[in-house]
Length: 280
Image (tube, rainbow, N blue to C red; front, side, top):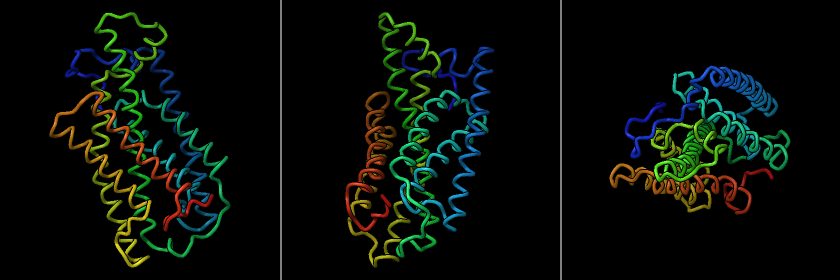
């Protein structure tokens, strides 16, 4: 999570605007971060009001999970900024997609305040689902970094090959770190949160034993949680042992995140199982 790569395969440094190094970029960046903090506080208040209205943790259905997930994702971004990590470049892409997620939650997934179904009355709701939200938020930050890496990598390849680049496109790419920096950012974020996601899967199986009398029953949600875990494990293993970097690793990371997204939206909405608590 550094701003300048000294180990890039192409030797191309971060774009000159990646850290808002010019006066205008720095000023606009500070304004954007300040507005993001304000929006986060309003979002936090909305989630807290939902919790007060239902008198429980606000992640008992898809609407509540989505709103809390978006809040945590933005919160993680602000934490990185508070830790002096120069990741301001991710802000526009993060906030835009979080707004889309909130729009989907309000327009499609919204459910009235209500109490939980009996199977969810457990302290494991606090542990298991909160860990899933945090894991997903960090995976999401990593996925944004991976997605941007692919664009920046193709841009750098064009520069190295001496091909002409559209000036507008070049200006956008110059607001990003180098491809090597983006690749490292995504890898470190995925590696950081993978142990927590592993605990999430284990906690879910312990809760299943308490709720249904078995640790594992190959319910669709359990199956796709395991598939997601295997996909991320393959990605980290390929990076650590086979030395995968660049586009191959990025493709595998995006496949893993796609599994996570399908486990949330696809399984909850389109597949019936013991975890059918979507509320839509």
